[in-house]
Amino acid sequence: MRQVRRGGQVPPGQRAPGGRGRPSAPPHGVPQQPSYVDGGEGRGFAGGDGYDSGYNTGQVYGTPGGGGPAGPGGSHPRGPRPAPNWRRRIKWTAITVVTVVVVTSVATYFWADSKLHRDVDLSKVIDRPDSGDGTNYLIVGSDSRAGMSAEDKKKLHTGSAEGKRTDSMMILHVGGNGDTLISLPRDSNVEIPSYKGAESGKTYPATGRQTKLNAAYAEDGPTLLVRTVEYNTGLHIDHYVEIGFAGFANIVDAVGGVEMTIDKPFKDKWSGADFQAGKQKLNGQQALAFVRTRHAFAASDLQRTKNQQKFLSALAHEVATPSTVLNPFAFYPTMSAGLDSLVVDKDMSLWDLASMFWAMKGVSGGDGTSMNMPISGSTGGNLVWDKAKVKTLVNELNHDEKVTVSGD
Image (cartoon, rainbow, N blue to C red; front, top):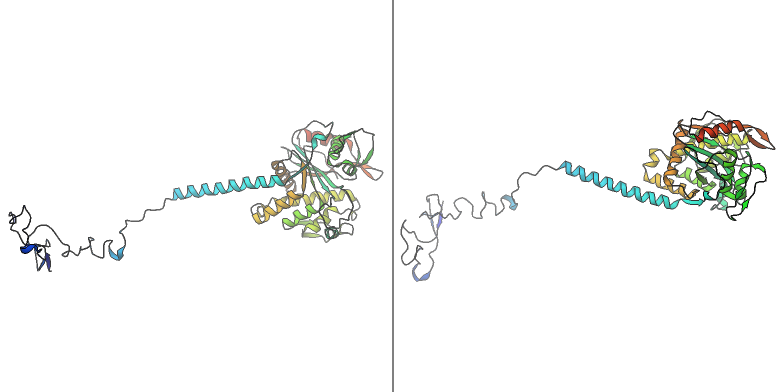
């Protein structure tokens, strides 16, 4: 192979003339041009000064094997790719997921908390019985038509009566020995006690007046209803929850309907009910008709309270299913519909509300007791409570004991 020789050859051990160890300059100052020779001693230049131009080995550009300064293809040579650090990746993925969950949960809590209508002040209730063990909720379904159009009223068969009355009333006791849901028939015969007016602030003395339980609500609203329930039972009410017609229907529609098994067919032109026997899914309009119907039954008020308990437990179960809770497209509309519709007491927290729904779900699943207030007879068309059984029931609830009393 031809080699390039730069400069003249200087014998080993001699200096070039006129220089200090450097080759002598060519005549007339013209640099000596490289010469090409064949063979060589494998050092690139005949003369063995140790300098290799690279032509011998193909390293003209300084990389073994040629192909440019970065090897074949012009890319920089790399070592083997390091294995992924899975522990680090898992750690940061977990941190990200936890952060998203925490932020979403906190945001949802404050959003939901801001939507609660805390309009009932239980501090205005006078002469209250002592609190017992566990927590007692008074759950009220009112016939409020607030926000409903004429078309809505016609569709839901609500009529157009002014004001608000209680269409259903229940006490839910949440305790350590099982939860108990007790329906209070609206036709229950009760005594109206002394009370403090919710708006006037004036104290009205007791007169011994006997009337239907739902008349207390119609007379002075939630606080008089709570006062009347406490006075006639001796049970302390810790929280108050109320929902109107439209709100009830909206919640049912938001969860996509509630599946029910209806034992016998019935029809009621007043509520709009028209049901066949068997398993079926009720939408909001049908659900409202189901819980309001009483003219289709012989024992009108008692059968209606049983239907209300049955449906509300099924609704709570539907709301608490994974398909609703874990699906944001179902969860948030349901929460919004429910919270927009509820009226609660000023001390009610979201945790209290959640506890109430979980307890109702438990009752529907057989983990608690569902019953009517024990009835002994009637007077003037009003249902009379069985005083002995009511006393035993209240004593068991106050001490958070297992309920042994039953009601029709």
